[in-house]
Image 1 (cartoon, protein in one colour):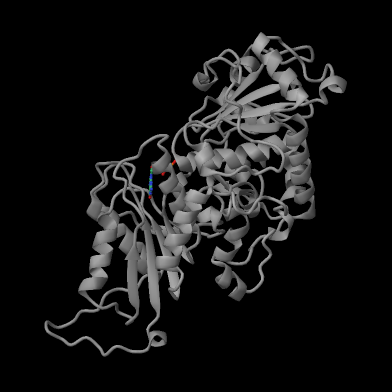
Image 2 (image 1 turned 30 degrees about the horizontal axis):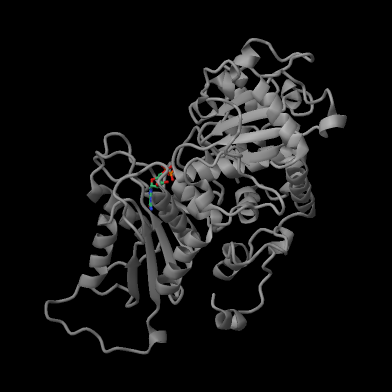
Length: 492
Ligand code: GDP
């Protein structure tokens, strides 16, 4: 907001109940302290214990992160190939351990992975270092004062970006080799929690940080495209800590994202300009996130599904039949006719054009005005292109600023758009393979604002019978099968 506008705004708690610290440079990352003005009041507030853990994590990042002596020694060891147990000389190294997050897949996946990795690093007291890939540093500001979360460009582990689950160092292979005893030493361990990981690799969800071999490993490299927290809540080793950090289980993404994710000025400028031009003055706003995974799905079916959903849930008015030549009503004062702004996001502009046309051709059934807006239509998904990713991130934030939201089932883009805003979405059922019909029901209200974990463990952590598939959505309250994917898990 401009200075004059900010003066008119009621005073807001820009530090978000203590999630954020004062003292960051406001100019270099405007979103950090400005985002509060674009959002509803916090619907979940941070527990004092969560704030303590965040401050501890920040101190750890400063004490052990890049630029420090412990980091230099740890990366020397990694470079020289030395096998090592971090417990051997805690006096020398202060027990610094590291979690390196590898970046891959679409931006929604990468955002979920970043939030997951931060929580996992905090739970296991490791410094989080994010592999920036080609675009990460252009998307997000540094979250910690006096420390960086970016993996240094001279990170010495050769070929680390190519690690995959077959690697000898993968958690699954280390466990299958039984190389986990009290005397085991590892140069690093690779944790592969891709949504399609093997059961052995998913055992990492069950790691007990206090007792297992992994706590002795100084370098852990994590690859995930998934939202890990629902599975971490199933691990008895973390349950107590998580309950103290998040007395409301459905607040995990909401609170961590507000703490950790601050779009860079360029992204934030796109967000605020679009918001100011098209959303700010509407009486009501609706976000519709369209993601079509299967090119064979007829676009008309998806449009029919969107309209069936918005009609079923009373999110958009229908259009009134008018006789040819009928005179439109006289203009009335702005107050008399509520206006609704619809934000559509998608790779394709067709849905936007059809819905906008609908309200251009005919008046809405309730007499209100409906305006329809779409920031971009990139046509196809690209990987690691800065401008493409910036647009996607800006659109996720814009979705999060709407009042109500319809998202596409299975889409991590949609999960992020709704969860960032603390919005419980109406999730459209993903069309089946045959595609010929609009799914029935077209959409349903989600149980919570939390994202879905697409690749959880299907076994009980205490039993570790990894090939015996059980319904992990029934083990503990507040971890349930997702609305849009029966084998996924989400916090409620
Ligand atoms: P998912 O594939 O739906 O789970 O979401 P991801 O975000 O992981 O990957 C989809 C990628 O396609 C995004 O990161 C964007 O690059 C692109 N994309 C998909 N939908 C949109 C959209 O609505 N707007 C923009 N700008 N890009 C999109």
